Image (cartoon, rainbow, N blue to C red):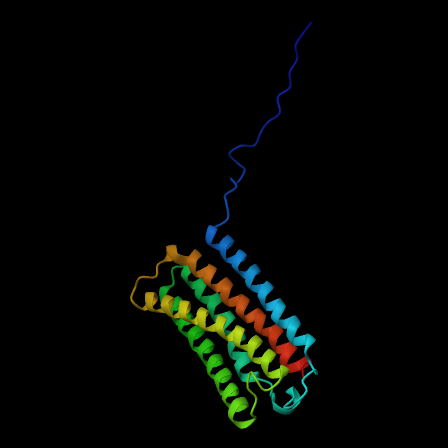
Length: 201
């Protein structure tokens, strides 16, 4: 009895070895999922209480579309993307410039939010204790503003590292993780903008 065997060629060296994803990316993805759940709760609460305030002012009476601040914040997503791409190509000067632009645009957004709150509190008399609208408005928009502040602090520190020459090409993955957080903050603002300033009015 003859023992016949067949040989099947195995492509070994031609296959790309599988590597684990960068742990910073995984960690940021988990953080974003947790933060998204929190924002969903606040958004649902805001929607649930729309029109249920027993006293004024109402959203239609006091809210104006924050077009300029929104454009600045959404534009900062583009600049932080270019900053990460520039660092990947070892273009440190370009990375620094785009980081500076991101910080500037984010700061402008915060200033517009602060001016809006000052107007609502001192000119329109809307505080967090005025009615249900005031409570849910300041809670939701304030939660987002807090995330913007955290992101701006991290971006500013990164910019300082870039200006002092401590930001290198090998830090590109870390900057990409930070950009994911900033993209999340911008995406959340789109939802907040639609719910508060469009649907809520």
